[in-house]
Image 1 (cartoon, one colour):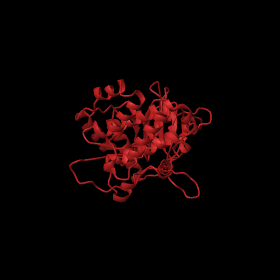
Image 2 (tube, rainbow, N blue to C red):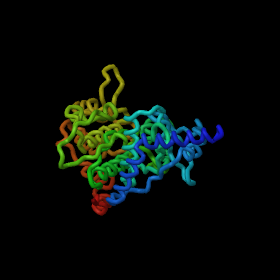
Image 3 (cartoon, rainbow, N blue to C red):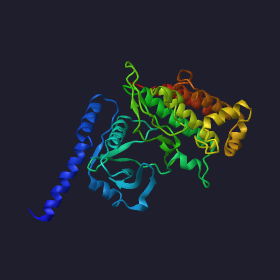
Image 4 (tube, helix red, strand yellow):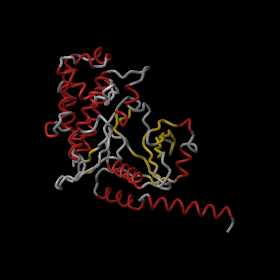
Length: 346
């Protein structure tokens, strides 16, 4: 056997070893089970590393969309523009592998207009690479802080309703509730029409209502995490409701969940203090004050405060939240009828 052939054989063996270590067989079984259960799952393509590298032109730095825990590239695959999520850690890491496998397995069984759709998964590398639909207007976090294209209040309100609807689907429409656990503006992406979709499901938890809640380590963005979850370590749908309430406050104020001042205070405490001292208008984003009616601001603020109640039992469900947001948008007309006609079907 020649040296070139030996290298090819070794490369193939390494790819297969990564596929096995990355839980490829387990993932395929889970996807098959999901399809048999008719949970609305879509076909997930198992991609080769060669297909990935071709799509992003051998990791062309000019195609990088963003870098956080992963490097996300803009690519082209099967004549469609995609977002390729490449882990920055190239070493074998069981926790990181589990994170990406959970993200792939959960993403593929969900099919909703306000959740980012997964296209494919490559398991031939040390850590899986995921391929998603491309969202041309990027993250909500970035858009809220853009000096050139400030998001109008009407768009912010629509974004809130979009994400509330997606979360309501996750909590109610599948065979078991799915809690996202990392609802924040960085994980909300905007399409060409500035419609919002929730992304990044690696921290998501599938609940079994009839079982005693298990303990989960803390995941999420500081300032967005449910304080009750921090005390009990138990995950419920109300964890997402709290985080969504923080998101509403961020949309209204333009401020980050953790306000980096001398006291490192969080947005919830600052907002509650402003309301208690009759200083609501002083904390609202000036753009919002100029575009929203006083009544809209009051209603959304009240909804946000209800969502961030300290006790989960005092918070609304996400279905309640989306109904209220649609009512605010359309004062109880067509959008309220829309949610009734699209009731989450099991």
